[in-house]
Amino acid sequence: MKIKISILGLVAWCAAVFLPVMPAHAQTDSALLDALVKKGLLSDQDAEDIRASEETAYASTAASKISLGTSIKSITFYGDLRLRYELRDGVTPAGITGTGGAQLNHGDTQTDNRWRYRLRFGVKGDLYDNFFYGIRLATNPNYDRSGNVTFGHSNAEGPFGKDQSLLSIDQVYLGWHATDYLTLTGGQMPNPLYTTNLVWDDNLNPAGAAEQFDKTFGNTEIFATAGQFVYQAAAGNGLGNTLGATQNFSNTFMYAEQIGFKYKFDDSTFFKGAATIYTYSGTQGNTEGTVAGLYSGGPLTITAPNNSPSYFNGPFVGAGSAPETNVTGINNLAVLETPMEFDFKIGPGIHTVTSGDPKDMTSTTTGWTLPVRLFADFAYNFEADQRADAARAAILSAGNNGGVTANSNSGITAGTPLGDPTIQGVLNSGKGFLDQSAYQVGVEVGQLKKKGDWDGKLFWMSTGYYAVDPNLVDADIFNAATNMQGVVVSAAHNWTDGLSSTVRYAYAMPVNGRLATPNVNQDLQEGDIRQYNLFQADLMWKF
Image (cartoon, one colour):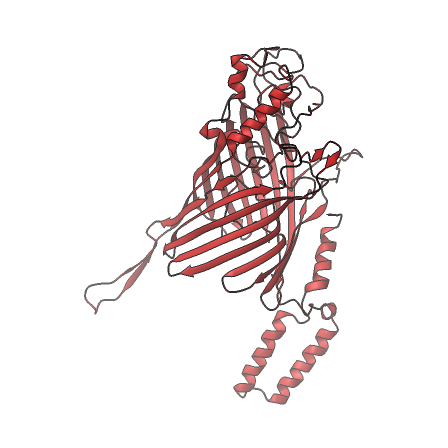
């Protein structure tokens, strides 16, 4: 749903619908009057006269015309505005194309140098009888894993285009706290799972239903979540659901089951971990592998310049006519994810010193403390072998060598038949553990809670070609690509409450040099990145 709307108009609309009749200070004044009456400083009649005068004055203001719906118990306005400078750079190797193109003596390079912004604005709160709600809008409805709007992006009408500056609904949900430990939610909701950007881009909000259990036993908190998410609606998704003369109009679902715990050693030290399994339904039609398949028989017509591996979109580097659904396909995915973290503080902290003699005074000394978080995540696709087999089967079914050759890293030359051992070696790639798994490990020091706070983060991340759902991986870090591994470092500072800046650098390369780095992304379009650099500088206001 796209809504073209001014921000001031949006604020005014929300205020008109949701703000309460009486301002908060009116309740405080009434309590003060009652206290004065009890102390005998005012008579009951004096207090009533003051209340009547206040109500008369308030009735003449515009605020008195604003009312809160009788079903709404509370409301919170919130959001964030991020300004960003970003530089992305990707380099492909020298090689040959699959369309008989010219031999490339050097690699191609693509660089994006952009100024961007992202705006998110929402309302959330409680209804009566333990129900709750939420609605949020975000910019750039055309790409769910970003929300970023590029300054100067033109809509073909001239400079200063606004086609990405539309606000769209990205969260709309209702929920019920059925008990103190059971919560039910339906709609397009904030991700209810404990997860990381190894598997989920944090801009994505799953749609469907979720059930959450959370109960504490002593120092241990046990939580569990089940999600039934509508992944793609029938007849209109981009997952290749056409079956020739017959079409399958079944919805595609994603299911998530998570169980985890959090153990508190003390008020500032805890360990948290979970295990989640992701599966799918509706990914197969009347013909095996044709619905939402990773690879289909139809070739992809690559736009000019189609003799460049920069536009490669196939199972390994250099394909000139690759199967069309190879990136978005969700066949053969049964992914286990295990996020975890250990949080503690270091430093002298606040200590109480007491002498052995009870007559001595007790003294306290205040020292610094520094929050530290060690975090990790691991994901493994139990059906990775079958996913790799489906990719090879599609190439083999194309005949001859299907227009497929590879770059200099593979040692394949133009016109090499499929039966050649070198090609077979490339086709057999993807069976290794790192191709079928993904992991992240890192450390974060500091926090961003109040003015003057600092935060630093360093982590390594590796995402195998067949390890995870390629439609969900983070777009901000490694170009929304699989078969990428590298290091990410960032530093952030709170200039004042709610206003912070962050600088981030990332460097990455392929996990498996014989495979491509496919992506479904509006950033770098290269599908065979050998060297990748990212620099981002953000200014963020949260309200």
